[in-house]
Amino acid sequence: MKNIPNLLLIAGTGRNTGKTTLACSIINKFSSGVQIAGLKISPHFHGGTKSLKAIVANENFNIYQETSLTSGKDSSLMLKAGATKVYYIEVLDEHLKTAFEEFLKIPQPKTPIVCESPALINYVKPAVFFIVDNENNKKKKEEIFQQRAIADKWIDTGKEDILEVIKKLVIDNSEFWVYS
Image 1: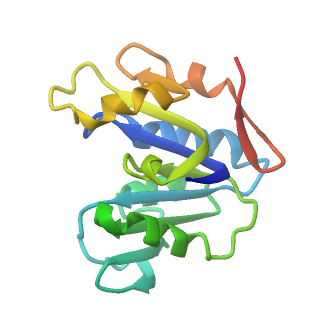
Image 2: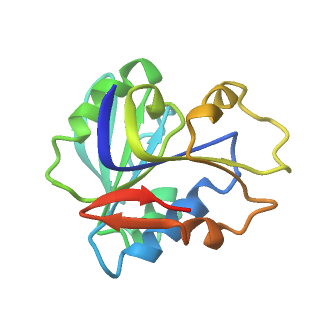
């Protein structure tokens, strides 16, 4: 498992749990002081849009750079929150490790990365790993509960204030650290 000290990883128990809200809040907190990158990884292939500039495209995965503040996509929201650059990867889980290794070749040395992906935790050790839940979410992914033991924080967005959670984050030397 590859250690990625500048990666903050966010997974969720399902759709609409607050993953993007958390990612954007973290980006917004730090973007005035440091360059920060956003990354959204999806196991669904939607195809590129006008706002997504293709960087790598092949039969196994696509890596795009988001270029619009107004597309309405999660990647666009990260850019609007203050990320210097935002990337979007479409990849099935069996090719995720290869796609992420390809992403790491994109020039961004030591830049903190805020990433939304539940499956990436199976291949890397991020500096910080959050799992986001919402009690209103009735269709929870069961596999995410196995990851709970390794999460730095399980966040219930229906009960917890996201701003209180991110107060405990600091960036030191382009690496995320949690403190309590």
